[in-house]
Structure formats: structure tokens, C-alpha cells
Length: 109
Length: 113
Image (cartoon, rainbow over all chains, first blue to last red; front, side, top):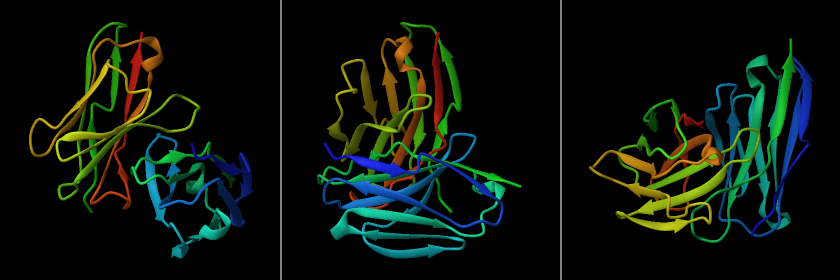
């Protein structure tokens, strides 16, 4: 199956800092989504981004499909940004998402 | 904004008991999914469902698991005889069509004792 690798595994930020999370995948994908898992365990959909660039407030994402990676940018981080960020891809036309192991982000006040 | 809902939010059961986890997908969505996340691990696909039948299932989804859409709004996951290793967070998701954004519910945290 496809390999989805996220880096770094852990990230500690001071409030107001910017950061970049990376997702590498081993095969061509049809779908790529970024999620934020909050401390209550809920998976919040951030972006559907199989290619190109999107922005939503302080978050933006870029997927370079030909080079098999995606980046999630967090600007001016806030304590509410803390949690685990997951990248998930669908690659075989069967619509099932394969998740990476996540990046745990801790934003300190 | 429409969202996927799941009940119950938490369930504790004894090993060997049957549990049914319930989901209400977004109303105009046609594809439905179940995923699970064992504590501290990555989210894993269990099954997808379209047009009243299973379209894909993982090797985790063995004979102890079943899914059903009993009416026009609910989507259920049944575990026939729970095991300790079934303890996990179970997420339901839906998408309007296959390959588009999957929206996840808040999850049901299942604990098997």
C-alpha cells in the first residue's frame, strides 16, 4: 500500500510563531486532506488539496503532486492550534483514506 | 453548516457483548465510511458503503463487523462480539461523491473491559 510520512513528529511553538508541516507520499494520489485532531479527539477537516495551493485564514496548504508532497503552513500560531495534524491520501480509486502518523503541535502562551 | 453526528459519544462494554455505533451522515451525501483510531495510533480505514452495499473493506473488518443503513438517515456499525483490542475511537465519515472531501463525525470512544 501507499506510504504516508509526516514530519516532524512533534513541534513545540511559541504563540505567534510560524511553522511548516510536511507530508510525503509514495504514490500518485487522487485525494489529499489535512485534518486537525483537537484535544477532545475530533477530526476537523482543514483542506481538500490533491494539488495546488489553498488558504483559510492563518492556515494554508500546498500540494505538489508531481513531487509527492504536501505542506501545511500555520502562521501566527495560537494556543488553540495545539493538537495533532494528520495528512490523509486516497490513491487507488477506492475512496479510502490512508493516514499518516501525524504531527503533534504544542503552542505555548 | 451540515455536519456528521455520532452516538453515543462514549460506550463501555464487556468483552463478548455486541455494540452498535450510530451515525447520521450529511443529508445529501452518498458515500459513507467508518474509520477507527486506537489510542496513540494513526487513523485506520474500516469500510466504505455506497448504494446500500459495502464498496471496500479493510482486513480489520472481519466477520465480527457489519454495517447497515436501516433508514434514509442512519448508518450503523455493529461489532458482534467485542474483544479487548476493539477499544478505540470510531469515526464515521461521509462524502457527497467518491473522491471528494470526506467529513468526519466527532467519534465514539469505545472501551471494552
